[in-house]
Image 1 (cartoon, rainbow, N blue to C red):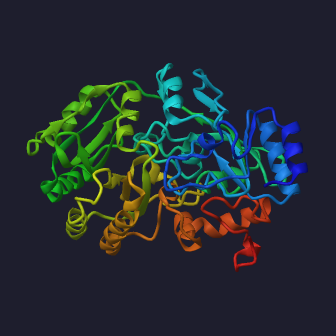
Image 2 (cartoon, helix red, strand yellow):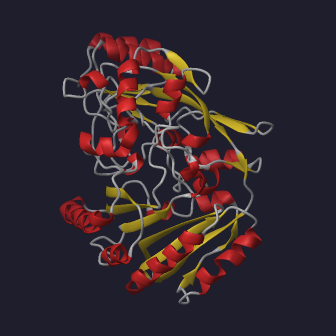
Image 3 (cartoon, rainbow, N blue to C red):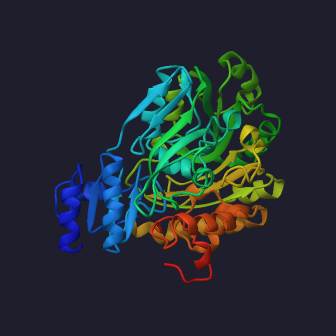
Length: 456
C-alpha cells in the first residue's frame, strides 16, 4: 500500500483516474502483452496529460516510490508494470496530429503503431514503425525501432524530430537537435532510462500501396528457404525488406515462410520478387499489392496478447551454411505458436554512424530472434528450455550485440550488449539526467558514478 498522504496528493493532482487494487479496471490496466508477467502495482495513475505525468514523478520522488512506465504494454520483459509501486500509465494519451506540409506528425505515447499508421496514411505518408499493430510507438522508438521501412527510411528513432520528456526531477524538457541535444541523442536508442516521453514528433515520407506478403513452404524445406532468403537479402534494394520465420498455419501445419515488403511502385516489386515466388513452388503465396496499413497488421495473428511469451535475440554478421543448419534443427517447437525469425537489416539504417544516435548496432546484416508463445502456464519450463537450447545452438554465429526491444528480463551484462559501444556515454548522461536511477524499471543503464554497484 502507498502512504495515505501520497494517495491523497495523487488524487488531487491527477486529471486522469487513479486505480487501486480491487478497483474496476485495475486488473485490465495492469495486464500486459506477455501473460507470464503478473505484477500488482500499489496504484495505477492513468495519465491524460504531461501535467499528470509531472505530478506522478514529483510525488513518487517525494515518497520514494518505485515507478514503472506503461505505453503500449507490448514489451516482452513486462518492464512497464511493477510490484507494489506506482505505475504511470500513458495508454490514454492518444493525441495525434499530422502536418502534411512539412511533412511530420506529433503523437502522444499511448498511440499504437496501427493507430499511427492509419492517421498518417490518410495523407499518403508513413515512417518506420514495428510490424505488429498493437505495439506502442514510444517504447518501440526509444529502443531503436525496426520495421518494414527501415531499409529505405531508417529506424523509427532516426525519424524522430523532437520529444517532450518529463525527467527525474519532474521537469518537462524538449529534446531536439537544437534543445537538450545530449538528451535527444540518448532517447534515440537508450530506452526508457532518461524520463517519461509525453510527446514524439516524427518526419514522414510518401508511402503508397506496397507489394508485400509472404510465401510459405513445408517446414522440411527450412534450409533451402533460408538459403533463398540469404540470396535475395544480399542483392535487395533499399525498398525491399525481408524476414524469414518458422510458423504454424491453420490447416497446413508447421511451415517456413519468407515475408517481405517492397515500398516502391508495386509493379516493380512484383517483378523483383517473381523468382522468390516461383521457387519451389511455395505451398502458399500471399504476395500482392496492398495498402500499407494492411501490411502493418499482417503479423498480428501470430502475436496476440494474453499468451505466455519468452524471447531470445542477437544480431548476426552473416547467415552462413552452418548457421542455417543450426536454425533448421529447431524449425519445429514444443508450441505451435513459437517461431524462429531472421530479419534482414542494412539499407539506410546501416548508413548512419553508430555514434550518431544511442542506437549503436548499425552494421549487422541480420537480427535473429526466438519467439516462444504458449497457452498453458504448466508448459512454461518446456518452452523456455527449448528457446535456450535453440539460442545456444545459434550462439557461435552471433555478433556481440542485441536489440533492446527484444530482450527478455535479464541483468546488466545484457543491457551492456544492447547499448553496445555507446553504453559509457549513456551512463554519463544517465548520471546527468537521472543520478539516483529513479527510472530503473527498464533495461537499465546505471548512472556512471553508480556503475560499480552503488546504484539502485
